[in-house]
Image 1 (tube, rainbow over the protein chains, first blue to last red):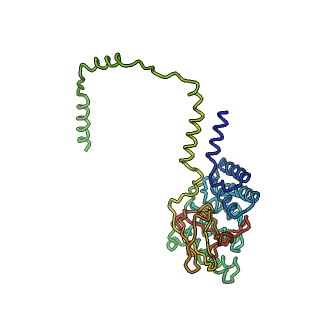
Image 2: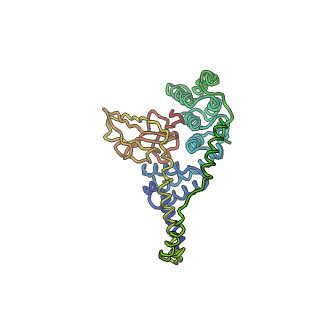
Image 3: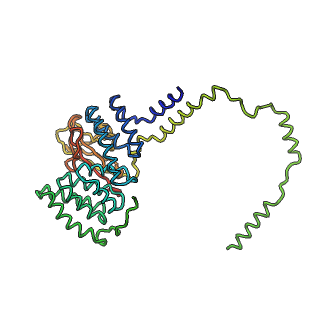
Length: 203
Length: 169
């Protein structure tokens, strides 16, 4: 009985108070997902935030639970592709890229081509695909820029492509043309201000 | 330099080797106090009650550790954060709130101020990728027209995304 009481105290204390915004049944299911994610060493904060997003937006419990379960699965897939020491922001950006249609192999290639953190490179890749650039083209471009381009260069690249698309350019062509210019600049260490690439420090 | 160090060491050793003078009456005083003092047991006998108290003490310790560590706030690390301004043009709106992964999707946390229909607020963001949206008049969800949209709007309303790089870019 004492042990049961002890376990109960620990469980209640460990439960995230923010999840009290969920109804009891949904909260219980979300907590079980959070516990599962924590048990395998994945970040729990994205799960909590997705559940809170659903609660604030008035989504049904079933929809919230489905969303957090899917996110938990995708976080696992992203970690498999990016490696066990990937940070939480990188995993979240990796999930966004995967959901946009980028393959796990491209994520692994990006990890091998660029020094961490990969958050911005993954985010730019995801955002390009969401903007309409075909996943294959966006992957090829970002992989080519990854070894030398700075985060700010990648953001500028994305903005330029989105600007061209808004002006009527076909997304794939916009990315290709912009890559040609940025790629030339990005491959020159003197102009990019980025030190020469070296093997990433993570597996 | 080493010679000087050796000198210092030698002096310290010499000082430590000096005999320490102790009051000859000390032993007698200590023995007298022991003889006069009340008899105290070396250790109190263990009661059954005390033996059963350990689970509660353990629970209290765990609870305290959790409350101090507050693992549920691990994602709200504001270290190395940069300030980002969010703007929405909504001349007809009476209230606009910014909600997202950075404020637990709580409309009360980031209310926006207006100047002639331009609503704005500034939020500190640590490196990461955040989903967010504007809540207009408490009922209408709007994405940020100046930011990438989230493709997987799993809850049926639009959201945007902002990515903060390691250098705040």
